Amino acid sequence: MRGFFGLDEQTRPGFGQARVAVQVRGPETPQRYAELQAAVDAHCPVLDLFTNPTTVRTALTVVRLPEQASILDRPGKDGEGRTT
Image (cartoon, rainbow, N blue to C red):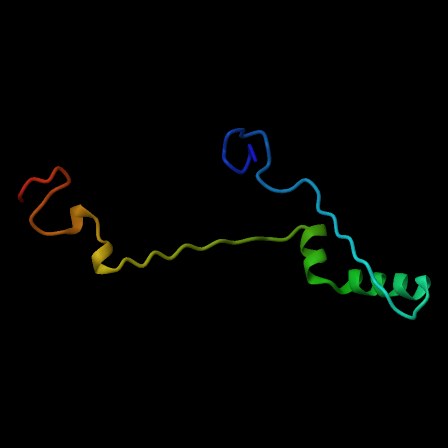
């Protein structure tokens, strides 16, 4: 949490490890379920995202509604409350 809250710049804000536990019940043999796990792991986009370098791009769009304008944007007053 220290990295997430910016309290320690040397600590990553993200996770150091992720664990997944799956429990199955059914008529197949343990070997068949192991084969299923291998097939799912080989084609899972979430697992791929976590296990391979992935370029991430962020974009910010700010849309301000008229009632959300700051005091500086409102006619008649400056930031100190003085009439302009």
